[in-house]
Length: 278
Image (tube, rainbow, N blue to C red; front, side, top):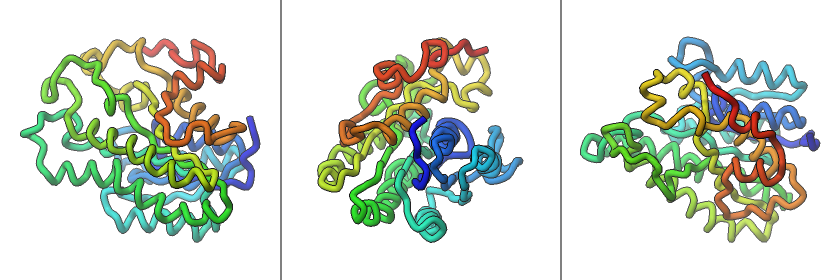
């Protein structure tokens, strides 16, 4: 792997899933990592994985890790996260805004989603990203160096699930905000281009995360047959490639589909991309 020693990355939603895999992949290349999520210790979530476990794995790879427990629906927590990153390491070179709000509104029908839930989705899926960039972009601009990756979703542009929200389909909040995120990346990329800082919307695809693995077979059937899901290493390798490739500005302002990128660059084998899930 290419050398990221001396670089500092902030990865949100890093206690498990895509965020954890991206954090470990960047650390394996030598980057020091600030990991953030709500779950710091075992017992704080029904899903497996904690910030402290992720940090321990990063340190075992020889990289430094700073854990910051943060609720991204709280703007003070968001500011504290990036303030801590800059204070501890003195710089941020890579932003991976991966966390998403998975509470009420993900699958409920429109009339069953209170405005407060819209606020929470907006806070995590968009406003936290805006704050993260406002706080870290100035020092990137000074160096004319940095990479900003915002994790988006294919639901921003299409919906392959024929079921409506409330009956197994995705609700209207998540795709609306991911579509906004895509436009944000395109618009901001025009501003950061002069500073050699790409702003990338990374579409991970349907990923077999720990949450999906824990789903009942019936729920998985609603979400699609297991064979259509990709491994967590797919978005992790895509994010890593964007950070280390010769011309990351090639992806500036664009939506990059992780599976398409790893196949085009031959980063993973077919069996690594779509392994057989139990």
